[in-house]
Image (cartoon, rainbow, N blue to C red; front, side, top):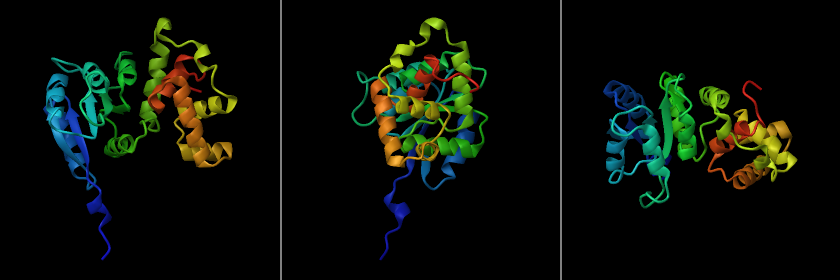
Length: 234
């Protein structure tokens, strides 16, 4: 008898953290309509989320930024801090935001967020973001994330920008790969662009992350903007 592949794969466990109950309800309706994911936790602020997450393991957290008691930035930093981390793999964090949010959102990337999702993004983009971060990739491909990072790069204070020397350890090919990552290209697309095997691209990406001390693609892309390797709009 052939096993049902869906039965062997547990649904992606999602936590919704937002102080607006209607927002959570709308997101939950969409997420729970999918066979491969389910909402297992809801919280109205960061502090409540952290308390619940100690006893409710989740895979992906959709985290609002502006909330009472503890905002999404502080909660994300706590979730991804090795000193406060619970046993096991920490959940991936996707920041929920509006496009006019100020530059403090950049701190969320540095604190450990795996990407951004606009609150008014189409439902399919939200579902894609959840699946993408769960698979281990940062949410760079959606145009909204790229536009937001470009926007943040233009308002980032000079003292917070990284010196170009940070990139000195990268080879020419690795710089090329980083530029394509910053443009939102997937490994497969980069392989096509550079006429190399996808496995080769994965090796380059791994070396870029290691040399930059970046946790994931999002952090690497932010570094590309901070150092001026990539400019908004290019």
